[in-house]
Amino acid sequence: HPTFTTMTPSATLCFLRQAGRNAVPTSSRITPFSKPCSQNMNVSKRSSCLPAVPATLSSSWTQTLFTHRQFATEKKSHPFVLSHPSEVDHPPANSTSDSAQPPRGRIVCITSGKGGVGKTTSAASFATGLAQRGHATCVVDFDIGLRNLDIHLGVERRVIFDFVHVLQEECSLHQALIADKKVKGLYMLAASQTRDKESLTVEGVERVLAELAERFDYVVLDSPAGIESGARHAMYFCDDAIVVTNPELSSCRDADKMIGFVSSRSRRA
Image (cartoon, rainbow, N blue to C red; front, side, top):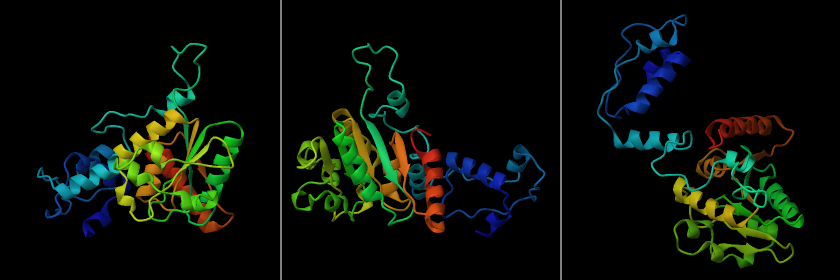
């Protein structure tokens, strides 16, 4: 909208905060500013230059705002099933010396903004190394619709149930897990090859990861490329993130973008 071109960054932020409380209907026309906003104004004065936001709610705007906010805040409509990353870093003080282990397994996300940099190869190698050192490890393919992790681990002919089947409760987690025949303690949860990333939900992903974290010492998430639904779901609940990049300008810039997403929109953040 042409009106937005005259907004300063601070004024835009104030408008978005106001829009978060009162969603703007798509059919409503935003009136021009009554007076120009100066760069020298403070934030409180600049916010008075903003147009009035209609009180009428629009379902499309409300859904869009909720979709973005549920990855940026913990104020969700349901209680968390998965414990906070800080409890994994520092177990509760009331734990006894015999049970000083973290309350659950550690969730590690292998991610990168750019495709083709080696995320799946790194995830498979990292999970294999953890299993070889005696840690019960499960590696999860989050690239819904374009799975490749099963080929890297050599189990492509053994995939019957996948991640989406577990999310939609069409099978149990035990049925979908594939044990590696060469490395003891290594399991894989394959991504669906026929569904799309819209099948992922925050509640469903959290439920599956909570169950995996109870059974395994490490849960390695193979994130897809980009910053779409699959990557956001993978990085939101992770305790740690490993960003894979190549010594090439576009790859480094996309990796820096992903670091910003992990630092601001994950549950740890």
